[in-house]
Structure formats: structure tokens, C-alpha cells
Image 1 (tube, rainbow, N blue to C red):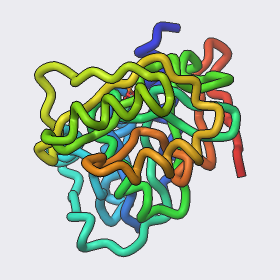
Image 2 (cartoon, rainbow, N blue to C red):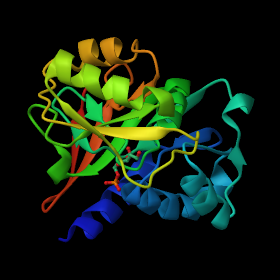
Image 3 (cartoon, protein in one colour):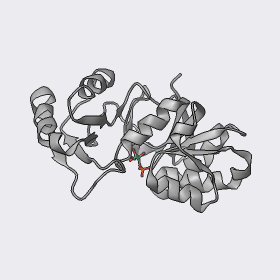
Image 4 (cartoon, protein in one colour):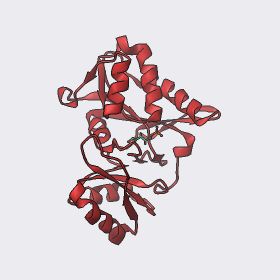
Length: 221
Ligand code: 5RP
């Protein structure tokens, strides 16, 4: 199976985690696009969606799915999103699509994060994928230097990208993220950091992993 076929497979499999009659949290990315297309087949059985990006909002509305503002919702049962890396504890790197801040906000509304990914995303130790960090523009160089002095990572500004919130993305290479919880906590304290793309506090509870043998379910609860 191709990577696109694996993404379509897990996108459809995620429908089983949607709770009928409720609002579903929707992430961002090519795997989530497959989920959104599948969600359209049950749009009359959900109360709507909360979206993590302008891109996903447009796709949801294109299918006639109601999109609610996060401020209108105080709680959702499930949030479904992809990942750039996921480890065997459900910790993730996210932000390859620059939507990490809104993704974390919607994930925070949810009881359960269901990750959908192809098997190339499963790793033992995170960090081979450059860690995305959303930063306020005036702090970009300062945060980049701090990554080098604190963790030995090399941060570069992602060229040509402004987030939905009007900020920059730093991509940090050369990290070995052995303690995701500690790094997330530390980096989020640095002035000018909006969100670090480590999802440890908001880790996945379930991962639907697309493999050539079919969907493998990893349960982290
Ligand atoms: C966007 C994300 C995505 O979930 C992540 O980049 C995975 O994307 P894809 O499904 O296209 O591989 O975090 O900010």
C-alpha cells in the first residue's frame, strides 16, 4: 500500500471513535484531510466540528460540516489529528503543517486524543523530525540561540511560513527527546515561545497506525 492509501485507511478507521451527536475536534494535515472526507459520510450524525486550522475549516465547510468556534465549546469527547512522530508512550511531535498552537488548544478541550498516522511516524526516540516551535517574530533569534545552549539543537526559521496566528515557525534539528514532558514544560516557559510542538501533556491515548497489514491500534491508556 502507498503512504496515501495508508492515510486513507486510518482516516476511515477514525470514524469509529467519533461520538454521534457530539462535536468532534479536527486536526490538520494530509492524514486529517482523509478523515474529514470520511467524516462527511456521517455529517448528519454529529453536532459539528471544532477545527485546528484555516485549512481544515475550509475543507470541513466544503463538505457542509458545521464548524464551531473553540470559544463556543467547553468540552469535546474526542480530538482526531495526525503527527509527525509518535513514540511508544503516545508522546508526539506535531506542527509539520504549522498548526501546532490551535491543535494543542483543541486537544486541550478533548477527553481523548486519537492519533492517525502511517507506520513511518512511529519512533523509539523523538527528534529525527525537526521540532516545530511557534514563536513571536521578535524572539526568533533569541529562542534559536537558547535551543543551542540548552539542548544543542540547531533552529532555523521555516522559510515563507506565517502561522494562522501571524507568527513564525522555528524548526529545530539535532534533538534527542528522551524526556518529552520536561522539554515541553521548559521550552514553553521561554519568552516569545507561543507553543512548542511536543505533545506530552496532550499525548495520544490511542493511535491508529496504518501498516501494510492493515490498521494497528496502539492503546496508551
Ligand atoms: C500539522 C500537524 C500534522 O498533524 C502533522 O504534520 C502530520 O501531517 P500529515 O498527516 O500531513 O503527515 O501537526 O501541524
